[in-house]
Amino acid sequence: MKPWNTSTQRELRHLLNEWDPIGVADDVQDEYDCMLAPLLGLLRDGADRTEIGAYLRNELEEHFGLDPSGPQPDTVAARVAAWWTSAAPRDGGTGA
Image (cartoon, rainbow, N blue to C red):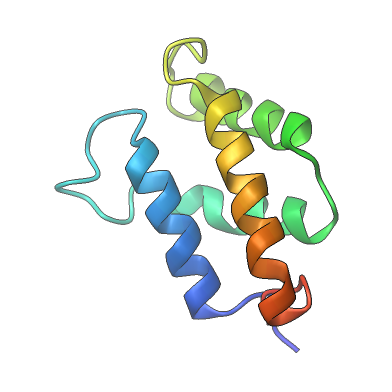
């Protein structure tokens, strides 16, 4: 059994591209794909928006070299958590 499906990945990619903390999503649709598997793993394991926000802040700072206070990772974490909660009944929370 796969831990998530293509539709789930596509929806999460869309959320990350809407956020677009480095401003390249219009030109590079897969720029944030490095965060898909870790985020989906966190979500699948029951992470809350605080944990998701911490992951996003770390990625902004360590991976992308940005000041995490600018791109509002906590706002995006709340959106991602809400999306996961609303998506979970369709696929039992596994995204499979």
